[in-house]
Each structure stands twice: as structure tokens, then as C-alpha cells.
Length: 421
Ligand code: ADP
Ligand code: MG
Picture 1 (cartoon, helix red, strand yellow):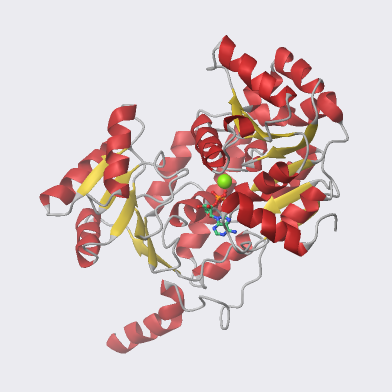
Picture 2: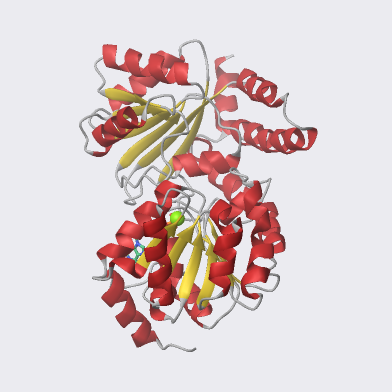
């Protein structure tokens, strides 16, 4: 290796204050430092950012980091600046900057001060930016949330498809790093193909979350009471209740409040100020529960979320894994409860009916997997991990007894019914 173990640990300590790498971080960092095209697949919270930040800080030149959301980029830049006395060590390049700010960014890059340059793919396609970047020393290009490149991912961004072309124009020998928390084999193939990194060194962490308990219950007319009962039983614990519609979010938050549960609603229809107020109330534990659409959660790092309830079944196993993944990040208890009625699947199908046919086909295929998950009598953990291309031993695996089917095997339930009959 180009850098030995103790040098790596010293850098980890110096820049981030951590004593140890998490999971596969050290392997990924080493691969990047060796100049390989590298593909890292690690669950949310696995510590993907550090995988490219550390090598960027240790190398000469500027690393370009492509990321889909301005908010995420800003967070990361602030965090990186916090570890250095050099403000220019990390920058965001986007269309909201003033001329003066852009000049400063470019100067810092030319001076070799900037180690990490965050850009949205739209900014990267701008001719003036490409021309500038052609003239500077780059270390590598990291594509975060790389699943955005795939129609099979949960967040397809057509602009991501253009990245390989841009890389070729910048310097086709520069290492390209893909990072994602999306584990399905289809999405992974798409990423490798579209980023043009066949033969990339690939590192895939396990997606098993042994501390999460998975449960599916039938959705009936009494769903609101079922949720109230569950939340009251868990009073004082933090939890998220996901609903499909904004209307339901507001209704259910109110129903919970009326029933003595401290809850706030959250959806993209509220203005930014209201959203951040409710989000903070949840993060600061002024309230126990946030009732939300999927607009809530991206980049939120509350370690002690104890339950994630789905009032409506999500549109893919991916989304379900991501959304439930917000529970138990401190490795403590995390109960993931989904309410399921086939009629909700039909509703989701209807939502897609005005979309292009190809998109509908993908959407329906993803939905069928959700149906299979909800209706399966096998270990839900095994089902989910299998979907992600991972083997799971439902007898001895880590977390093997942590789902409703594992605790109450279907045969047993049927046998009891027979006896009653
Ligand atoms: P991801 O992008 O994979 O979802 P992040 O990069 O946002 O994950 O990291 C998740 C959390 O893990 C962050 O709070 C980060 O500070 C922390 N973290 C990352 N690497 C380490 C480490 N080696 N030791 C301790 N904490 C770490
Ligand atoms: Mg990340």
C-alpha cells in the first residue's frame, strides 16, 4: 500500500479525531489512495463521507465531490471546515454563489488550498466550470449517492448520466469513486456501467441491521387507533410515522395530539421555517413523534429513534430499508412496523399510470417486491437481505429472531387456528 496502517490512523485522528475506522472505511480509503477506481456500497450511517474526505485531505490536488443535494453539500463543507483553520479547505461550487465568491473559490483551488470541491451535477456540466477544472490539479472524482444514476434507484437524476462524459473531458485517467447505500445488484450494475468504472475495486458492507425488529400488520379501518396504541405503549420514546400524503400527515399528527401524544407534522408543503422548526422540535426531543412524508429524514442523524411506523406501505424495498434505517442508529432498540393492505398497492400503481411506460414497468416490478415482502411468511430480514444480494442464515444469523415471522412462524399460527376450529 502507498500509505501504511499507522500513517492512516494518524491522519484519521488528526483530521477527524477518530481512533478507529468503521467497517470497510480503511479498505476504501486505501484503494482511493492507491489511485484505483473504487466502488463503495455501505448502508446509510456507514461513514461513506470519510471514505473520500480522508484521501482528499491526504493528497495533493482537489477532489471533486458530486452530490445531489445542496443542503447535504453545505453540511459536509461546514463539517470539513470545522476540522481545519483554513476556510478554503472545502468549497461548494453552485449557481447561488456571487461573482466575488466564485473568484475566491477558484483562487483557493489554484492556490492548492482546496482539498474538497462539492458540486451538483448541473454545475459540473457548465462549460465555464469544465474549462476551469481542466486547468487545475485534481486528485479524484467522488460521486456520492451514486444510485441517482440509475432508473432502478429510488432517486433517479438524469444529469448523473452525463458524469462520465465530463470526467473524460476533465482527465479520463482520473480515479472515479462511486458511493451509495443502495444495495440492489441492478443499481450497482448501472452505476458501474454509467460511471465507466468496470473493474473498479468494489467494497460492499453488510446491510443487516440486527437491532431492528421488522413487523408487518394488516391495515384495517382501525389503523389510527392501532398507531395510537403503539405510540402510547412506547411513550417517551422517539419515533417517526411515515404517511403517503400531506393531508394524512396533518390529520394523523392532530389525532395523536388529541390523544395526548406529543407529535408534530412534517412535509414539503410547509415553508422552510416551519419545517426546520418541527424538525428541531423532534431532534431536541420537545416532541416524541414526527408524522411525516418521505420528505423527512434525508441526512437526519438522530441516533435514538426507537420506532418507524409506515401508515402506508412504501413504493419499494429500497425506500423501506432507507426509511426504517433511521431507527436504532445507536444500535439500541428499533421497531419497524408497516401497515399493509393490498389496496394501497393499487393506489401506488394508479399514481404511476401517467408516467412513461418504461418507468411504470420499473415501478411495478419494485412494487411487486413490496407485496412479496409484506405477504411473506419467511424471515423478513432474510427476504430483505436477499433482495440486496446478500445471504442470510435465518437460524443463526445476527438478528435472526428479530421479526414477526421469526417469532411467530406461520405454521404455528395456523395450527392454533385448527385447534380452535
Ligand atoms: P453515510 O454517508 O454512509 O450515511 P456519514 O458519512 O454521514 O455516513 O457518517 C455517518 C456518521 O458516522 C457521522 O456522524 C460520522 O461522523 C460518523 N463516523 C464516520 N466514520 C467514523 C469513524 N471512523 N468513527 C466514528 N464515527 C464515524
Ligand atoms: Mg452520505
